[in-house]
Image 1: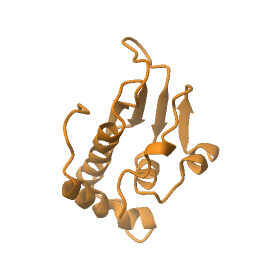
Image 2: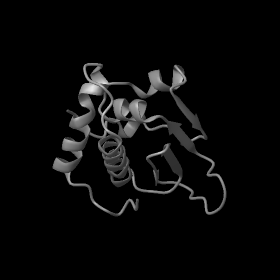
Image 3: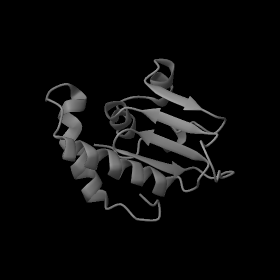
Image 4: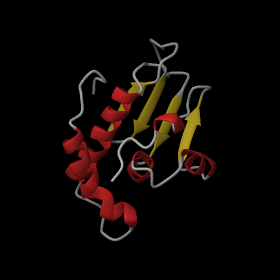
Length: 126
């Protein structure tokens, strides 16, 4: 997913809205294609909002992006890595979960000096 591709705000909002009932605990987990779309579009939006290559954000198995200005890595594991599951990522991306709470509770692993997304979250507000 190249960060240079722009994200249609309406498409992003629709994809994330489709998962919002699940995030609230009112509905079952969305179908895999719908969940994948919400994660991938929100990751792409993050990369567009925070361009760069110093931090890699991973939401397996749906996607990963590089973002945030700073020194870029060219080989191997980047020095700044953030990883979480789809539900936690979408809660962060929509502002339902604070970055500090996610890290402190262990729902997000963040390694490296630049591995902090608090400045760029939420990506979309519902």
